[in-house]
Image (cartoon, rainbow over all chains, first blue to last red; front, top):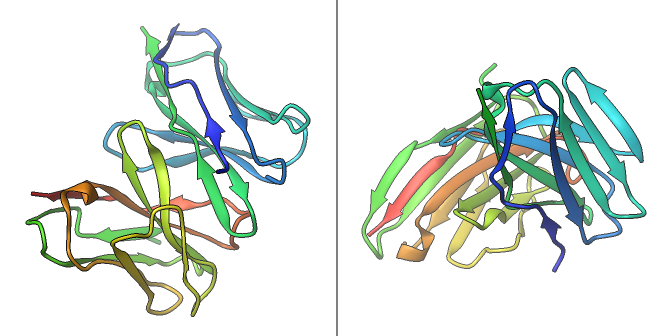
Length: 110
Length: 113
């Protein structure tokens, strides 16, 4: 059974701090990785995608991928109360499928 | 450009009743997916359609059937609803299967009594 694992949290950070969210995956064949943000009662929305080892930055968000360690992370700089949500990590598995983690709940304290 | 739409938004069923959840996308995507989301379980794939005319089982297909009606529409049918099917159901689409970003619909909240 292919898996994506995340700490469920909650991860609490003060406003303006860096939030660090982590994810590990079991399928060494996974090629594409995604971070989604999900507000309570809403659908997941894409934050970042990453396909190759290293860092990828987009505004306040940086995704990091280490395929050798099977590890993906998301850094949120200058965290805002509006960043409070559940963050889902996903990895592709096989030709057609995506495997999702259970999500990390982030709370940014004003 | 509405993206991915789902109907209905909410539904209450009695055990044994049937219903169909509808999903449509206007992004000309080839692949479509049905997930269920339960507390502590994350998103679990029920069925997917890699391209028009094909459907395949995901992780939790029992009790469900699907139809890829055309490139835009992908429906999920519960033939005889059970309380274990109480969940939030999300439809998603992507341009190509298994590689590209998935875009999600707003979800259907289903309660089976």
